[in-house]
Length: 268
Image (cartoon, rainbow, N blue to C red; front, side):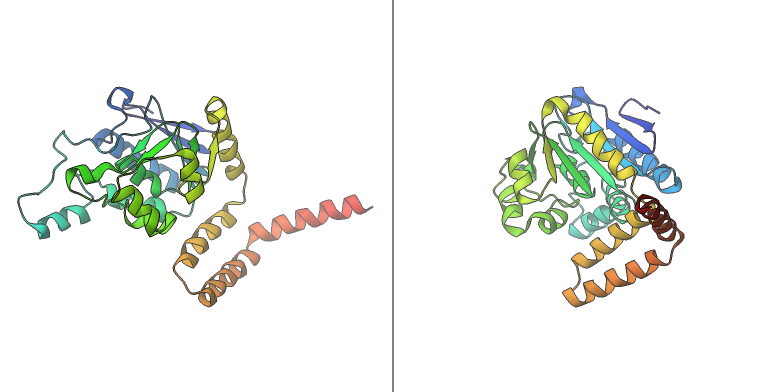
């Protein structure tokens, strides 16, 4: 599927969406956001789709949210209460916040691949994903300070959770751009690949994810995210509960029986 701004394709069990506004530096607009909503809905409804991958075309991954087109600047003249309600409704009429929350909560993996600079709203979209992969030429920045604002679509809360307050302050208050290697060092991305092999490396990683047992993947995402907010003792209880559910399920029993059969055959 393509509506011009967003390309959606199924590559085996990988649902790949591509930001396709290179002439506008892939700035997020209504077309992209509506396409993302549709794609996430398809991903949630289909058991055969195992991985959601976000990529982009052009010299930017994303330059942020488009500041024109009727979406911004929101109810700036109506007071802080109206602005808070506007934010709760999803921002710019695009449903950003509900979408990012759904991506974070859906018990399947989301991967985003930054082939080039990722700025502002593009980084906030990426922070809701489980895996962030960078090409060496990727760069990261949050320039909202120029508008007297903070990145309030996850740029503060999710970034701080990932990299800690010191680096969140560096990027938000200091308005400092970081390169891919620094992003890897502080935990913003999980891996950096050469530009020349970036697409192949990303697809290989996604194929690895797609080959994992789906019930295990769902439980792993759920328990990891829960454990982030719990005391060590309660976190251990959560992981034990999760393993108890998996261990009594058909998926784990089938995999265990298959492993035993192979082991028994090899031992003869």
